[in-house]
Image (cartoon, rainbow, N blue to C red; front, side, top):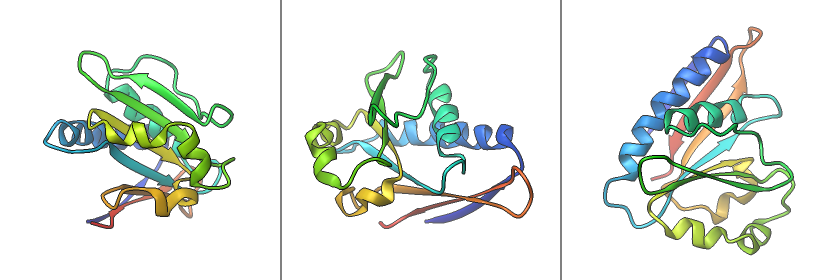
Amino acid sequence: MRLRVVTKNITQTLALSKIIAREADAFRRTNRNHALVIGLTGGLGSGKTAFVQGFAKALGIREKVRSPSFLIIKRYIIPKQRGALFHIDCFRLKGHRELTALGFDEILQDPTHIVMIEWAERVRTFLPRQTLWVTFRNAPHRNWRCIMFHTAA
């Protein structure tokens, strides 16, 4: 699967993330044997964290979502249903071993989890083949973003 979308402002990026969240949540609740993983790639300020914020809001999470740069992993309970959203920032990680030490394997084993990973390219070889990849690029116009979705499977 490949899809490319251009958003012209933060409002459109948030709206897109909410649509993706609803679809991802429905997909997560089908028969799966591990967490749904979404790998986010793109430069600083490209929209990764804003995308996670809109995604979390669509799942009913009211807690303020911030980039977990220093925490590395932040867990949010998805209200009114079993499961959690894990927001992971790999910017400061040197490799997948550090992620493993933080309990990443256990997080992946639970099919009720959604895992969103910023700077996912740093741990690409460690992620499941079914990972949904979302790449953010600045478009030619100010505040525009080119957002590309693709899977390897």
